[in-house]
Length: 249
Image (tube, rainbow, N blue to C red; front, side, top):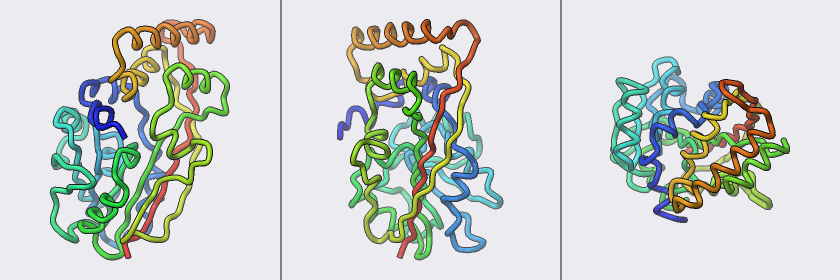
């Protein structure tokens, strides 16, 4: 796994916030269902600009903290989700005490971690009976133009892990058990500008040479011209949200 790609997102924090979708509330609620009754201490790890954090903050009586290795992403998060405490750290090195949380969730992030080390470290900070939740928004490539868009932009490590050919999904290890999966289908209206922002927030483009970025942008514009996507007009971009949950033994 490329460390350069994994830590590249701060360079495009504004495009990440504008171009990436939020998470369906019902998917996030499903991840948190096994939490012990009345418990609401939750850490969003790999929180980025706060896409998942803001949904977590809607849960009744939730006490949410955000953890990310990138200071620029956390700066954007503090603007988009005011009042949530933030900490620099990773799933493998959590800046929190033992057994201090009822749940840890990672949105669009587990494909960047070392599964064994992350499972052990998150097991340290989550109480017995607490929850590990993993969630991804993946474009639905059963739609032909979406499949063509991915061919232009290149697939991501997330797409390959969660929905790639022969994939068994994310690897979750002890002390977490009883892994369950659920998914939700939905659409997001996207303009040409938003689609470009989404692409520019992807690690492949962030770390690509300038000439390759320009060529990808040109090919995307050719596709959008073909789709008749002009000005402020939008097209529905279909997504499948894949959510996983496991319980700390």
